[in-house]
Length: 362
Image (tube, rainbow, N blue to C red; front, side, top):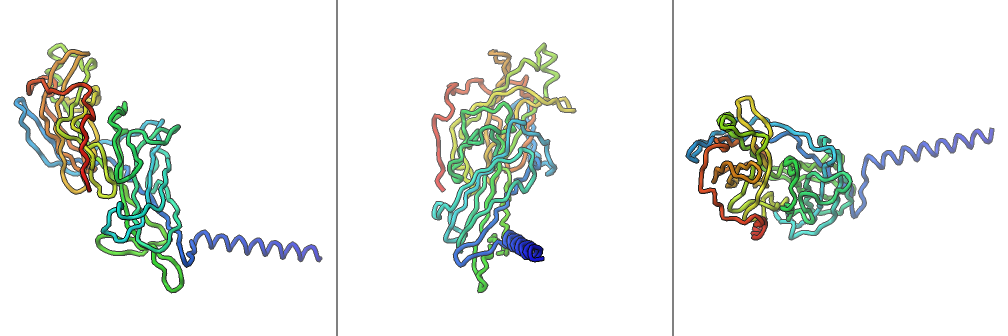
């Protein structure tokens, strides 16, 4: 009987301990100095929506049309890749301050399955009262080596493109970025309450969760040739082609997650690819790319298209202007296989990539 009473007391004590631990996990108790905040990382994986269509003619002129904002074509990242998320948490004096005026509290890097939908993960931070900004960057990286791959992310206000890295699949240049301001205050009961600070209002969070919404930091374009049949009728083969895209003037090669703007540019860059998709209207996709783009305005790139069969130049079409909008797709069409536009002499050495770099100060 005595042993039975001991078992009862022991079981009761364990039950009380289990209930106590469960309450601790879910209530995230605060102390007089700090509180637990949960950053919920939400990367939007839906395809970019259509933006504009540019139709170029035989003389190098074009017509521009606004497109319905329907979803464009989706893609599936390679199985050898993971989605990487890099988060920096800063304490700042005011929601209007930039992070270079604040203090870096913590930095985390995680990798998740490449197909995982939002929220991809939730990160836990113990922070004192104050005002904070969370920055998060998402990109693709190798599963067996989750360090920098196409982007250099030592600091999220100075993300850099590795201009020497040429992914076989340009979709793997895709990236996303987002930020969130919040404050931590302590009421009379000494419970810290994270409050999300937006431009419109301040809103107390539920369960100490602060969501960070990430959207593509790039605009995408696709370049379609409308003269495939004419090209084939001339005795050429589409399977033999090599397409060279040369970016002229300045193209973005860096990004500031804090200000949501490109902040580093190279004077030119070259991309090589091969024709891929054949559309129902007879157009063939010559090239596509992702370009870091401003969050609140239209950006532009200027490109030349050169068509090669081995080392032999078959055609060139120069000075193609492409408007870009963040998280949108621009469609460019024209007779790029058969109509020569421009001199063909661009005056740029083959090893010119990244010789001159311009950094835009904040």
